[in-house]
Length: 287
Image 1 (cartoon, helix red, strand yellow):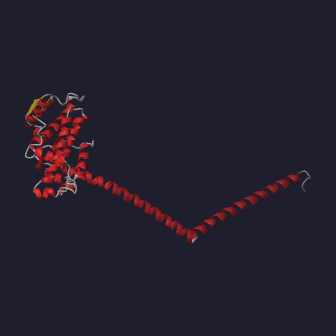
Image 2: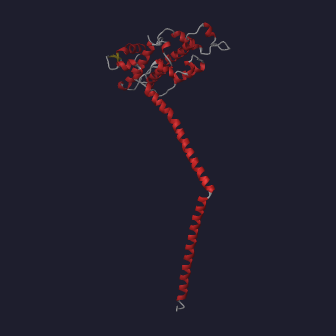
C-alpha cells in the first residue's frame, strides 16, 4: 500500500504524534496534581490555623499602628485647642496653669530655678503678638505719637521715649525696613511698659516667658536690646526669691536652710527679690 520511501516518513510522523500526546498527558497530570496539592493544602487544618494566626497578627499590628498614631496626634490637637482658647485672653490667673508644679506650690529650690532659667535662654519659636498686650490691642487704632522712626500709641510713647533716651535707636543695627521692624519694636516696647507697671507679686512664669518672646523677637532682628534680656534674668531670679520668702516668718525662713546651713534656693534670688521689693520691675533698667 505504501512505497518503501514513504514508510519512514509515516513512521516519523506517527512517532511525533505519540510524543505530543504523551507531553499533553504529562501537562494535564501535572496541572491536576498541582490542583490536588492546593486543595489538600486548603483543606489541611494546620494550614487553616496558620492562615488564621497570620491574619490575626496583621490585624494586631494595624491596630497598634493606629493607636500609636492616635497617641502622637492627640497632644498636638490638645495644644492647638489650648492655643485657640487662650490666644486672645492671656491673664495672670490663667497663666498660673503654666507655672511649674514646684514653684506653684511654694517649693522652690536651685533645680527649679535653673530649669526655668534655661527656658528663658531657649531660642524657641515665638507665638507672641499684639493680642497679648492690652496696650497694643486697644491703642493701635487711636491717636499715635512719633518716637524716633515709628508711630506708637500714646500710652506707649513715654516708655518708648525712655528707651530712646537711655539706649538710643535700638533698631539702628537692623537691616529690616521700618515697615517690617515696627511690629517687633512695638511688642518690645509693650513688654518693657509692663515691666514698668508691674511688681513682683503681680507676675508669674507665663508672663516672664511672654516677655522673653518679645525680647527674643527683637534680638532676632538685630535690635540692640541685650540690656533687656539681662534685666529679665534678674527679674526671674527675684521672682523665685519672692516665691520662697512670701508670707514667711523668720523662723520659717530658717527651715529653708539645708544641713549645711545654705539656702535651698540660690542666694542671688533672695538678693534680687529684696532689690525689687515694692518697686516696679523696670527698676535699674530705665532712667
